[in-house]
Image (tube, helix red, strand yellow):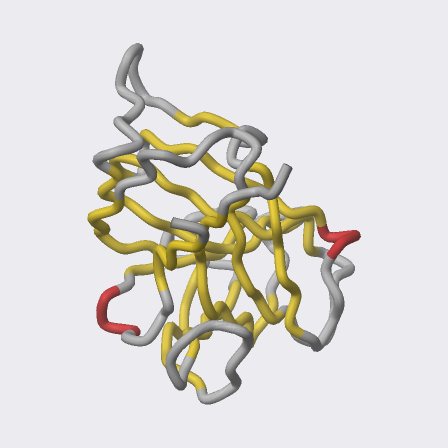
Length: 172
């Protein structure tokens, strides 16, 4: 297995907002590199959740058995108009919204108003766990999220579009 698609973002109804700081989840024809004919868009607003991120999540059934820390997790994202308040984009995989690994791609590596292909080593992740030993089995991933971290909870940006998340074997 050289390449495995984890999500192609074809159906908005499959996704929920990470908080009320994310609104406007919908499909768009503005397509990046992934399979299928649409991507999903969402907006970052200054909601009452006071989160410095916007994103979407869904229940998943994924198995990363056979992938190693030097292999890549990749995603395509379109950030319109400005990066001034953007800190990074991210992908989360785990057991649930409290127990996951997060991969980040810095704002300085994104391009405004163009698709960005984000590539991060699987081993270069941050862990979030709400209890000792509550992380997850990489062969039983049940949660996937994607989004954008901002500099402040009051930042807003409309028209963020995501297209595909996948893993691929690194060539050494």
